[in-house]
Image (tube, rainbow, N blue to C red; front, side, top):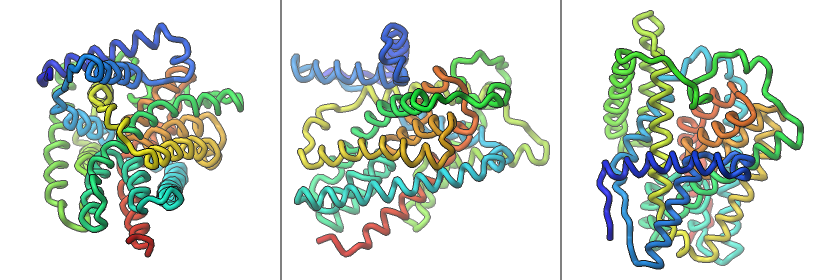
Length: 400
């Protein structure tokens, strides 16, 4: 076994991003379907690692110590970028999109349980291969797996949850671009001309050159550090209570409070170019580490019924994004970008949703509304809504 330490893993993640960029520049089909750079490079490395383990018996392990801090940094920057005045401007769209998200959660759980019953499997297995791990991700999946193991006797629940979340993360990064491209080309969509002149968020234009001073950079690092420290402390304090939330939700909430709390009395204005720069760097590195360290062998070991459930969930996600999300959000260009983002966190995670939308807007043009709505719904509201939906499904008298 070959193990890379923290710095070597960081170096590998940086090379993965550069590799993904070079492959995209030379592969027309990947550019055509707007596959994000971290997904291209990360999956290629994961496949190479899997091949070396299978053929040459060389097991390469990455140190994922930085993965959580990078993820929390990304969510802190989302919070620091969240101007409440801007969110109020997109309030109706946010509520409509939240409704579409809740509809997907219900569909995923109903489909998972129904397929598990049809395939002769335990109902909780279908629930685990639904919103628990797909919309919830690795953290939510691992947390609920303990409940399923202790209260419902589901063997290897944690391992199943991690494998399902991994499958979703891969598919979420692969289908978002093709779904949006199909909608854009099918209906001849183009960005709203007002979007070209509207001040866009830094996440919309990750490749833009930004003038940043060392002083502003240090101030931003200090704000992010406060978000991470206070948010993590709040998450720890809420652990075991009825209000328990994932750490990244608490970190994002602290960022929103900091940004708007300091701006309202005129004490301090967050320097958005520095926030977006750090956010895009942490996003890219987080996805690179997450994808290149995937244990693809765990997916190969999935039982056939569970694999069938997950494939059906991926197809259902694409169909839902095209026929529900796209339509309720207005059947326009913004709606197509929102559909790509929904595929990202409906199967994987909010960082995947942002990467999907960046790949689309980099090719077709900006979508201010999508980058206003998706980060807040995908990072904050979805976990609360998902917890409620899961608990309601667990109340059904269908479990042994």
